[in-house]
Length: 158
Image 1: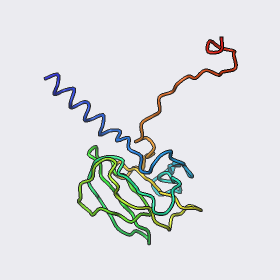
Image 2: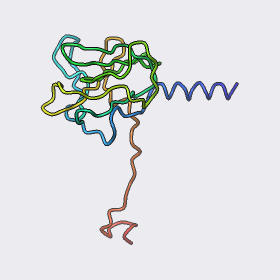
Image 3: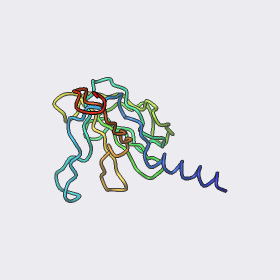
Image 4: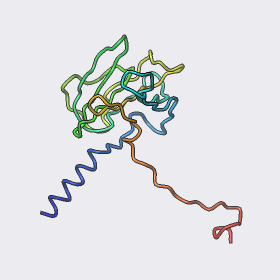
């Protein structure tokens, strides 16, 4: 029973935070998430990540393709994760089809031209039902590490 419970908790933890980057690292955010004050107000409902046209876009978690096709002249891909969250990627040329299962880290699209950024970028979004969330919350948080200053003022320089 304990093993079953621990396995379930581990699976839930992995489903809650997929932790796979949508692009190869390090990620370079060109525009941060700026949620609107109300559902119909102006805001930035995702993050923009700098990347060259042709960059491989990866699924941030295992799931199913919710939508793959054009929206307002741009290619859009939307994946539903097991925890009910939905990630979106644009502008892309999808390499997967609606209803298809994907694995975490799988290349699911290729970045195309036509973004709203001054230079090529991937707009990455995250939704829970109709509520937009910060997609960067899906990534694991780095572990802080204290490093010696090397200036002789601390124990490392003693």
